[in-house]
Image 1: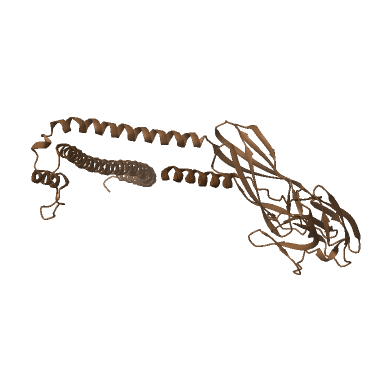
Image 2: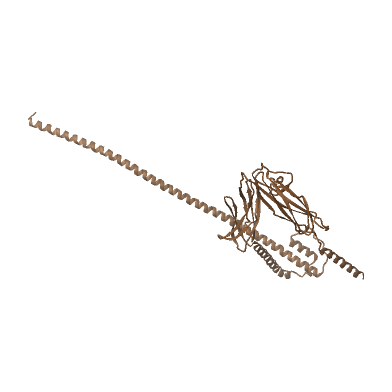
Length: 460
């Protein structure tokens, strides 16, 4: 009877716990809507303007809403910082006024918030900005309302005409090297002018020279003297292979175009296939080891014949445990426990032996690889040396042929000079010989004339 009462009490607590856990709790929904979210005006110094912002209670609780104006600027990391009383070069909070500071808005109702703008006469040309906030808190009876409330804002951008410079550049355009269907895209735009720029980036994806996707990204405001990081993505189909992302931004004076290649692959399927393949390989290896260990278990002696001392010795021998290290004391066991111990010992022995064989095989493979790598390296060195030697021989042959040709030309030149000199000398000698011969002939003629005269004169 007591057990029945305990069970009933236990089931009561269990049902109470799950009832409290899954009972729906009504929370107040605190939501505000605001239109327009951005106001852009061009006003010269001394000019003014006015308008209205519509604030809507989109929740289910009445709200007490306060309205105020704040400046904002950008930190070094690109985050927006809302500050009060910290006027910057581009601040415009002092130029704005709102028609009311607070009010009540019931669920589904709306209110119109008038505002006025007056630009100072000495306003610096370029862009100036501020934000008009509407902050609401629930005033209903629901105690579970979030104490944080809700806040929405409308950005007011005022351009003062004059020496206005609209200039910017893309610093970085990044696309992941490998993507899958939804490919993220990031780029940084630096505005180096003094006026804000409304960026309307467009992304195009090319595959084999054809446009397969064209995406218009959301409009982004780039503020003067800031770097704005813009993130987006492009949705692609199952068109695998090499692609090229092209970023286009229209600007005054032309279109900025930046390109980035990437590879589209079904990497989740590839990764899953690799994991499945690894699992199958492990399963096959384990099955092979179990099949090898099966016959050896049958060949082991009857476990009933194995004494405790012999079991300890077998364990020491299988695991290479020194005799100096004591094993835990073993109690006499039954036949089944001895059989289990024998099977375990057999498996341990087989595993240790396989590990040793695999270790030796790995060592031999490592040595073979080392020897092969060394042999290939030396063959490469010898081949490179032979190529260098052949090149050097060819260079020497070319130089020797050039030297021989040059020597032949010099020898021919010298022989021609020697031949000319011999000819000149021969001509001189020939002329001398002719002159001497003429003198001998004249002498003989004179001698012959003298002899005839003696004969004609008689004895004298």
